[in-house]
Length: 132
Image (tube, rainbow, N blue to C red; front, top):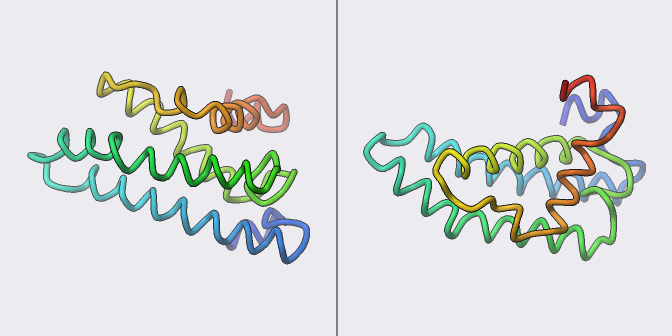
């Protein structure tokens, strides 16, 4: 939140700020689930990871997909990129790579709206210096 405030990336008004904060909380919940698997017992890693992709990811991806649909916006808090968009983009991107490493289906393949959101951020000309 600090950097979001510092760089004016928490929305243009209180409604967008509220959406940004809500989205950040949901994204952090997903991240914490990943941390529990990646830093959990080595013996249960593979089973926990597959369970994560089988039940946790569909639940969270449905939430984010419905969020974008309900709000009718390109990004989580509005029609301009905000702090939670960077965090969600990273989670989506990491899950694509993680699924590939486990020989699982790509989770974004089942969610065209989220896939388009991921692509929108990845192709943003202002962010190309970061991606390159």
